[in-house]
Length: 498
Image 1 (tube, helix red, strand yellow):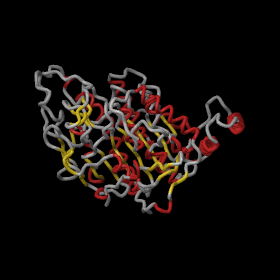
Image 2 (cartoon, helix red, strand yellow; image 1 turned 120 degrees about the horizontal axis):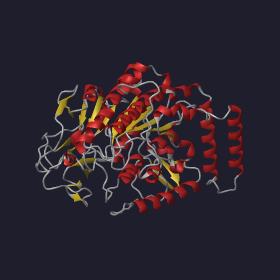
Image 3 (tube, helix red, strand yellow; image 1 turned 135 degrees about the vertical axis):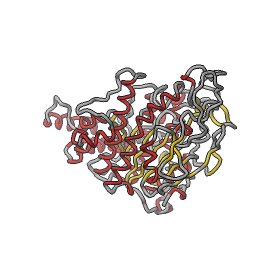
Image 4 (cartoon, one colour; image 1 turned 30 degrees about the vertical axis):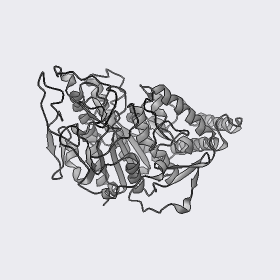
């Protein structure tokens, strides 16, 4: 279970591949010691994770510090925040400029300012994302299941026709794609509990209907033929008998969705135009957001605003029809979006534009429909950023970004280095307190956690508690228990709950 201090992408992939093979060979994952697991009353039925992939700087978003405007020739340690702060709907809680709509709904949620990322050695985004999404640091001897897969397996679907675990907005043909695939999986739990991936939310309707050139009858025949081939395949070709049966059940689940009325939830064309424009201002009917144009220019930024906004709208529609776990990402692409190795300030102007209106509207829409109380929204990122410090003040690691002695160019004005000693997590609904602040960070650099630290085990324990899952729940695999939180040690942060 230990991590290596200098873990490379190659090592990550090698171990992930071995774990995948181990998952294929795994038998039925039984719940271990069920009689010893505490019974927890759920406060939420659905979880929506809004993933800020790439490292969202806490001092530039939900934990603003002293603001210093850009001046040519300024010292790089002169600024703590590159945006002034703004008030929120809660006295005493301020956000960073550019998050005005989210600030207006802060009275519906809880803000954690003391999330601390794990010490995993040399910082690699995909490793920390693996850690956040599974609760375990790679390498692992088994394929660790994603948070959404654990909920899917343990709780089952709210609606049998709707995939319990839906992943929106992340493509797997960009940099570090294989590393992302390593944790976006059900692992040893089996294919039927894995994610239903929708890279482009405006094309979601296409994922729940047969290919356009295929008649329903031909599609049905092909589905039956494929299942027959799979069932007749030699032992071991598609993993253990359990894994093969799980794959067959996943096919049945997908086929059930195609013919279900719930499939309409995937079709954003059925949403009123005025509603879409609350998530994507200026949206035009038929507008496509495929993010294949100029990746660094205004067109790219507009497309990403549209993709994430439509993803949040799709999440609302899927929550309405009974999805269990939904993740919407701003999409992790190395050196883009939140991965601000340069142009930190200007890039965050664009990132705030991407998330502010859609997230606030998601909260308001779920509240208006009477769903917010039973839906836990979690906004998070793998770690934070700082202009000067790489890692933690007491555990510095090799700098991955060079900082000039004087900031002569605006591209160096912002947060470029990976900072793991503080970070923000924003929670709405699902039984958490309203207008609540948890944790405290230092007002001067290093802006580290100084009160009520929250680590991944305890954050996961809190999320699991909301849906009624014990942090000590374990699945037996390879004749040993694999816990929902590392070694079953996670403790829910009870101060977060109403």
